Amino acid sequence: MVTTPTTLEAELLALAGSVPDPELPVLTLAELGVLRDVRLTAPDRVEVTLTPTYTGCPAIETMSADVQRVLHDHGIPHVEVHTVLSPPWTTDAITEEGRRKLEAFGIAPPRPTGPARGPIPLDLTLRCPHCGSTDTTLLSRFSSTACKALRRCESCREPFDHFKEL
Image (cartoon, rainbow, N blue to C red):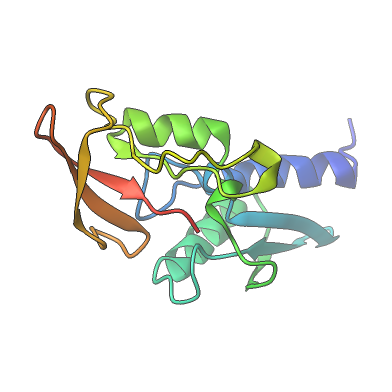
C-alpha cells in the first residue's frame, strides 16, 4: 500500500509530537503545544516548526535535535527544524492531557488565560496538586525553570511547582 503525503505527514507529526520535553519529560512536545507544524517538502525531506515556551528557552536546541533524531530514525534523511516566535506560545497551547499529566506529576498546571476556555476566574488561588487545598503560598517566582514558580501548600506543607501562565 502506498502512503499518501497527507497520511505520511500525519504519521511524522505524531512521531515528532511524541518527543518528550527535555525539561518536563512527563509531557510530549505535542502536549506542551510547542510543535506547530510538520511538512513533507520532498519524498525524503521534512520541515518542522517549533515555538519555544519563551524567547530565551534553552531547551529549544535539545527539542530540535530530538525531533531530528526521531524523524531520522524513521527514515527521513533531511529534517530541518525551524524556530518561530510568532504567534507566540502561550500556556493555553498545553493540551488537557498535558495539564492532567502536569498535575499528576506534582506540578500545578497553568490557569487558562484565553477566551477559548471561558472567563478567567476571579479567584486567583492555586490548587495544590498533592492534596487539592487552595491555601498555597508563593515561595519564589522562579523554580527549576523560568516557566515555573515554586509554591508551598499550607495544608499538607508540601512544596510544588506551578507552571506560570503566559
